[in-house]
Image (tube, rainbow, N blue to C red):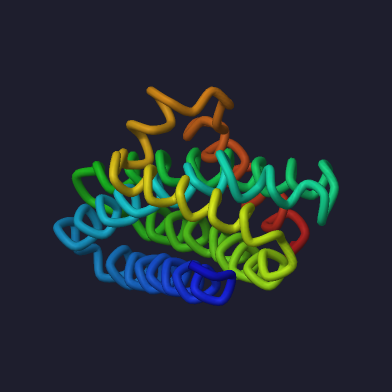
Length: 185
């Protein structure tokens, strides 16, 4: 497979994630627990293999392009997305979602969107990698998808890097909301 084929696959994966995230905002807004649960499950089953091959093969291959600091930022984005996903699962488990719960869920989902769009752009850099490196990335992708570990299973059983906790995400949201309210006054 060529870099162009990788680009198409990668773009399709990010489009799918983008659409699930927008659907999730709508499901929280409608307070539809079945839809929220189904979408969170879909997101977790999709993000596990996707994040895995990015971290195991794509990001290391791009260190020479971007430098270690930017790759560390991408990994930190994953750390935060994992914690955000866990926080969304916590919110979805509430008996009834309040206006504040829906506002928090919406902001949390929106906080993931920049990573989706930024990450999608990495494919144009992959075009500059040697064909053998692209093949290695695709082979890692194939293995990750064949093992098909959903996000939380992969995070707790395979990934060695710690993620941001759901509790930390919740604390940061409360602090940001309080700061924004204080500034508005």
